[in-house]
Image 1 (tube, rainbow, N blue to C red):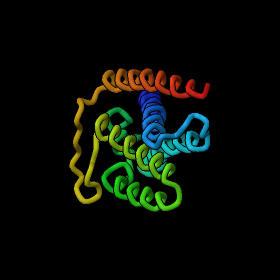
Image 2 (image 1 turned 45 degrees about the vertical axis):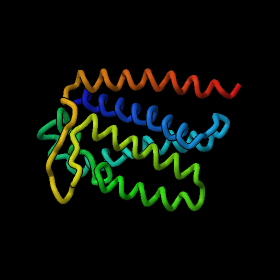
Image 3 (image 1 turned 45 degrees about the horizontal axis):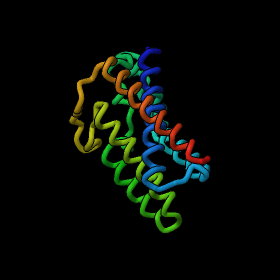
Image 4 (image 1 turned 180 degrees about the vertical axis):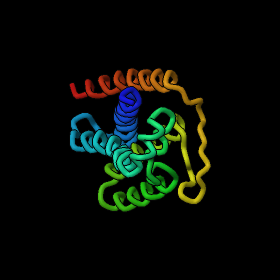
Length: 166
């Protein structure tokens, strides 16, 4: 069980590192604009807080079935198409206040959700339709290798980006 929690934490870290980088680059945030960078890091990880709520809410299911190949059931509706709709509305509202902030939040949240759809089991029309889809074969090895590769690539990109300050 700990192993699968560790994989989920690593995936959240992967979201934070990759989505926040893409968000700050698309929004043309300079390395000196630390407020936007902080918001991007925080926002890209905070989306996974719903997993904690769902694990607690459905604890009897996870106690019975464990976490292996069931973590997609720890997603709320926000991790599916409804989440894209809500993020679009939030991004639209933010665009009237601060376009850079809107881009950061909108892009990184979208990247996070797309990564979840690509790398996990998705229930895109939840709660209307409970059909589960997965685009990439689900295995711990594939998930770990993919997360490590993404972390390495985006870790290097972050280092290069932050080095632009000088």
